[in-house]
Image (cartoon, rainbow, N blue to C red):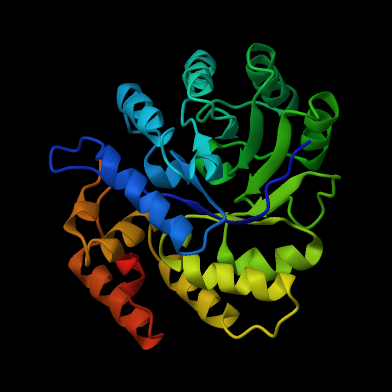
Length: 294
């Protein structure tokens, strides 16, 4: 079983003025996050508007992403409710030699652990080559994994179920499996998670905190005194006051107006919220110079 370790950004997707996916800018943004310090990037997670972007656009991006020098650092999200669409999309990704995926169970419907196990079992039956990070986010899909469910999945599929992104935070303190990655969904849980044996984080705000997050992670690993963790947590707490996608795109759009484009029903922050966000970040001496990566 492989293991995912480190700082991973749940990357935003960049759109043009007609709300089409800007493939080149989306890939460039994600590559910049790696240059800023991320060990890797998730493409088409919930932060990347995966549930709103067309299948055709996703496939075009996957094709071009396969040519990136950082190809092996990407985890591909699916963003489908449909089991069959998920299976078909993984088949496309296989053709371009991607194997690591972040897959959330379906939203809207009410179901239990056995049903979630059946969902992933069908995926693995069709694609035994794939490596899956489970996406635990009850607020988005209505279901949260139990420890027992994940233990059963790993027991049945030790080579395919390699980790979990825990954005519900009911797992990361107590889920202990050998060679299995537990990755909380917030910088606020980075240090406490690492102390508990977690592998790192996958977060939306790493779109703007990549360098800070990597510094905190490296200092923990190297047993160096933390000097940036409080600032990192403060930045996250400010963004947590808003819809994360809206807040991140609002902040990024200051340097590049391309980030102002969001697919409805998503939107940027209103002017009052934008001013408050920027004022609070300015007080922390946090700005958008990180966008100027060579």
